[in-house]
Image 1 (cartoon, one colour):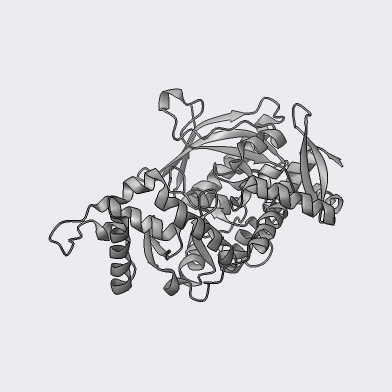
Image 2 (cartoon, one colour; image 1 turned 30 degrees about the horizontal axis):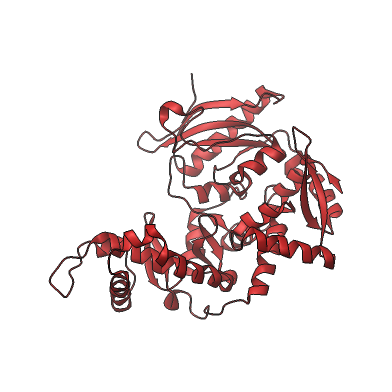
Length: 397
C-alpha cells in the first residue's frame, strides 16, 4: 500500500490519544487508561512552564489533575518509574518485560567507564552500604547519604553512594517509592512492588516490544519500532519483522514524505484500511477552531525525524543551546491544530509574578487563517495559565 503522510500522521495522533475527546469520568482510572494507551509518559525535571509529564497528559485530558498521577505512582502502584528512551512512568503490568533491561544495565553499568569513575575504587562496598541502610531505615534520598561515616573512621565520598543508588535503581533492586519536590526517594523493589519478580521469556519480550510499538504508532519504520521503548536492538526488530510478514501478522506499506514525496518502507497491522478510515473521521483532527500546545517531550514530538517526515515541521529543543545561539527560545511548545503543527510558542511561567509569559509566537509559512489561529492560541494559553496555577498572561508587544 502507498499511504500519504497525512493519513499516517492522523493515525499516529489517534493512537497517541489526540484524535478523540476523552470519555468517562475524569480521575485516576481515566488517567491510567491514557498512560496505558501511550505506553509510558516521559518524566522531566524542567519546569519552565510546567513539568513535561503534566503538559503531555493535560494536552490529552483537559480535566487532568497532577495529583491523580501521584496516586497511580505512589498509592495505587499501578505505574512504576524506569527508563524507556528516558525516565518514564510505565504501567506496572509490563514490569516483567523490564527485567531484561534491569539485567542489561546490571552488567553494562558496572563495566562502563563513566559508571566506574562515579562509583570509585570499591563499587561493591558502596552498593552494600546503600542497600544496608535502605533495608534498615526504609525509604531514603540521595541527600540522606551526604554525610555518611564509615566503620573505618573515614567519611564517605557522596559521589559513589549517589552513583550506587542510581545503579541499584537502573538494575531493578531498588525503586522510586515517591518524589519529594522532584527528588527521588528509594526503597527496596521487593517492598514497593511485591510479586513482580517474574521475568518474561526472550521471545515474548521481543513480541511485546514490537507489537506494542506498532499498536501505538499505527504505521512505523523498523527504526521507529525499535525506538519506541528502546527495549531491543534494531537488528532484532528486523528479524521480528521478517517473521511477522511471513505469518501475515503485519503488512508492508510505503509512506510518502510530507514535503519531498520520498517513500519510506514501513509496516502496519493488516487492519490498516479500517484504522485509517477511523482516523479520517476523528473529530479533534477535523476541528479547525481549536489548537493545543504540545510539550517538547510529547511522544508525537520526540522523534524529530518522524515529525519532519509526517508533519513537515522542523523542531529543535533549545533549552541546552546557548542563549545567543537559540533561534526561538528556551522552552518552545509546538502548536497543533487538527492534524497539522502550525506554529510554535515560547512560554515561561513566573509564579512569583503570578503570570504566564508568551515570549514569542512563530507561525509556519503555510499556515492559513493565522488571525483565527491566534485567537485559538490565546484561548489555549489562558487555559494553560489556569492549569499551571497563575492568574495572568502577558503577550509580546
